[in-house]
Length: 102
Image 1 (spheres, rainbow, N blue to C red):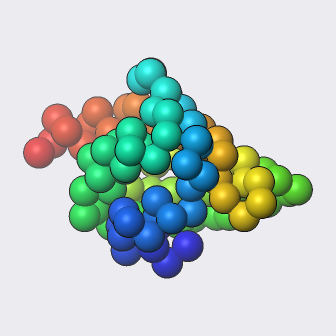
Image 2 (image 1 turned 45 degrees about the horizontal axis):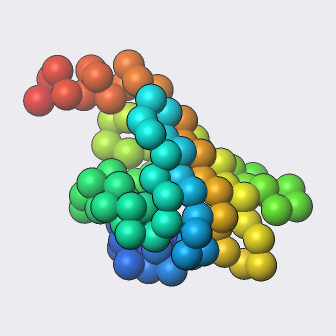
């Protein structure tokens, strides 16, 4: 979890399986570590990430977060200790209003 908080992209990537898929609301899926790396570098971009809640059940885990002024939730499926699927949902209005104010 610390690597997410520090936006340490390489450490975060070590949590993913080579064939993982990351679905981000309103965008095409990112397939494999290379595509996921590009997406995470853009998303994390040195910004602070505040973890608000973590829940897990079996091979599923959810992470509720605040990123800058935006809020969202990530859903992970973990198999053999690695993320194989990552679905991300965010409050579009919170990100939109952040970009309008800056």
